[in-house]
Image 1 (cartoon, one colour):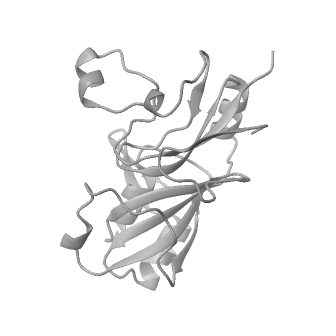
Image 2: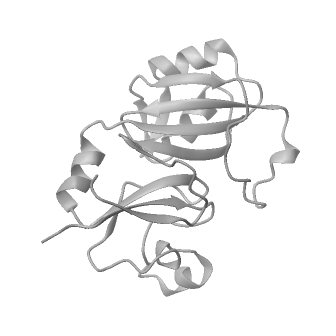
Length: 190
């Protein structure tokens, strides 16, 4: 059987799932089926939380999904932070910080982190993000080889600079490129 693979730009405010078994949730939440009529057997490879946006992979190949999720494939994010981040906070993010995870403390693996000198060329943020209410902000690139629940947000908060906007731009060698929120493209392989 030939597997199908897609990349999509998950918009802010959408869940990284195709549907919900909770009928109350289906009326209030947005799901990936709103973007494309995926065939049965298609599943998201990893997740982005509802308030994050950017690159999400979809596949019918469960083995490939597990491989990407479990093998340390790099995932790169651009994060808009509340405040002007300091070099010491960057060093802490690079070496690993302690974050809460499932009721325990977890030390993150080393990450690649650098400050962006210019605002990245991204689609306009959702109007539901209240960015104007915050202090001056800074942008960083964060590349991880793990993907714990809300990890980037927890990491930046742990060093005193909460994430305002989070956009995943790369998983392994697959890039978001110039996709717009809601775009879906079939890819030949993952």
